[in-house]
Amino acid sequence: METKRVYLNQSDMPKQWYNIAADMPTPMQPPLHPGTGQPIGPDDLAPIFPMNLIEQEVSTQRWIDIPEEVLEILAIWRPSPLTRAYNLEKFLGTPAKIYFKDESVSPSGSHKPNTAVAQAYYNKAFGIKRIATETGAGQWGSSLAMACQLLGIELKVYMVRISFEQKPYRKILMRTWGAECVASPSQDTSFGRKMQAEYPDTPGSLGIAISEAIEDTVTSKDTRYALGSVLNHVMLHQTIIGLEALKQCEMVGAYPDIVVGCCGGGSNFAGLAFPFIRDKIYGKNLRIVGVEPSACPTLTKGSFLYDFGDTAATTPLLPMHTLGHNFIPQPFHAGGLRYHGMAPLVSQLVMDNLIEPMSFNQIQTYEAGMTFARTEGIVPAPETNHAIAGAIHEALKCKETGEAKTILFNFSGHGIMDLAGYDAYMDNKLTNYEMPEEEIQAALKVLESYPKPKVS
Ligand SMILES: *Cc1c(COP(=O)(O)O)cnc(C)c1O
Image (cartoon, rainbow, N blue to C red; front, side, top):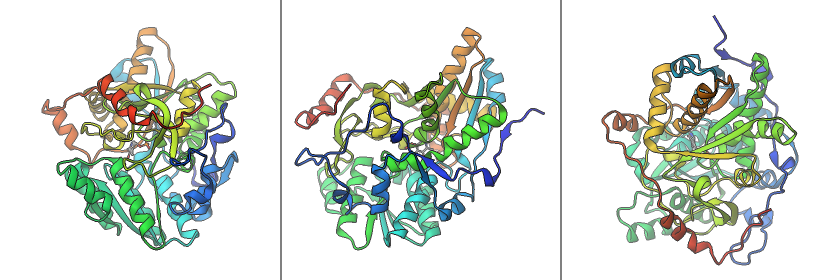
């Protein structure tokens, strides 16, 4: 039998995270204060995040030690396997070799605990007793709930209303792991009450939920906020994925020609891709592809601008690809990809042509997910289906050209708790939505009066 799953020993788990800020061809542009337009300093962020995480956020040190206590918790499921998708290759009839890094093996079923555990640890180390956060499909909320439970911190989660209603099981998971979870917009914050009064039927959005969690944070005692994606320290914590994958690729002598990941806020993609982008910066020849939904086309159709991270326009301005902070995407099943912005690190690397963005519509992604489930057995998360669609797209190009390229994608999570979308697909009830250009331009108009990031 040929090797299908490549395992690392637990003793080979990376002991440091990789900080790509140390190697970027264009240095990162700072977050700005929305009032003054001036760069913000660590002290401005202190009411929101603990100082030890703020230090990581602004660090340009290449390698950062992973604390022992974090490694011990990650060892519950890490290192995660690297798997060769032989059956998918055979089904497609492609000469390409397709590998995936399987982040679905974590207790909550996705890559998110990689940063949840680290963030809960640093909050605790700083003396914080309670965390407030938002969640879309519930992947982040449940991952942080597990991490907070294991480290002894209280957690309150504001969950985007449409997911709260469509996805009851993650709510139950959050409660099982000891967290409180409410639908957003909620009655528990003044911004939530205002949104509910103005838009009684709103499905909610990540931007609204972030605003509520931040308001909770700054008005509660010993509380800080935690974000599951977008920020530099989140990308950092996820690089354990790519660092493990590099070792596993070496074990089977298969360095990728193409690395693929799906992009919501950018963290699972960054986690796998950044260690490979480092190789690319230093001369390796490979392509790095980030895949997003056509209904929320942040990288492929948004603009690189300074924008707020939340709908209430309370966060610092971040230099990123955005569809505008007022943008509320049409409901589609990949809840984790419904965010108006993108990680500034990922955005800058797109500007520097180190990452190629790509988009697929909803039905294409479910076709890919169905093909994967029926060949490899594992039912992918709706978000992960975007990465699979990208990998299949590249594998079929290889079929045309006859090239035996090696494709590596991030299997960011399983879909066992998100089956409704599969049901809709099989009943031919899924629809596609492309954002019209005028709608994008209208949503970006509100940013005209703010400073613009430099474009080299
Ligand atoms: C949250 C989530 C995503 C999208 O978030 P990123 O920060 O872009 O990784 C993708 N896949 C799964 C399974 C998720 O839970």
